[in-house]
Picture 1 (cartoon, rainbow, N blue to C red):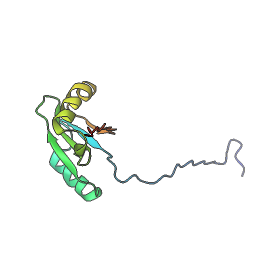
Picture 2 (tube, rainbow, N blue to C red; picture 1 turned 60 degrees about the vertical axis):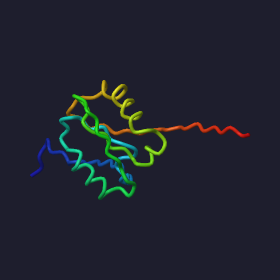
Picture 3 (cartoon, helix red, strand yellow; picture 1 turned 30 degrees about the horizontal axis):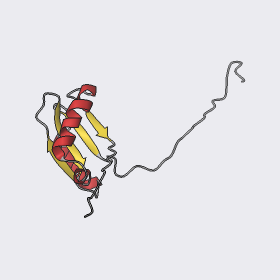
Length: 115
């Protein structure tokens, strides 16, 4: 018996395959005061996933709780300067429940007086 309205099923599958990025965090994270993961847990995760060490910058604020930043970044910019920048520029863009990635571009100009 042949059904008049029967149709053959057709399937199409489109897949984008790419390498999983290690580390999943490049330069830093801004963690909200009420983020779903705490700073200690995130630091432990980073220690397991990333070879480059991250530094904890504690921020006393009503929205931002912590800042985790790649240690080499802090060789180029002082910790308190980075914290002030995050409070002024990043804080208005986030809620206390969020965790935001930071891709930081630092540039240092060096001069030396020659006698």
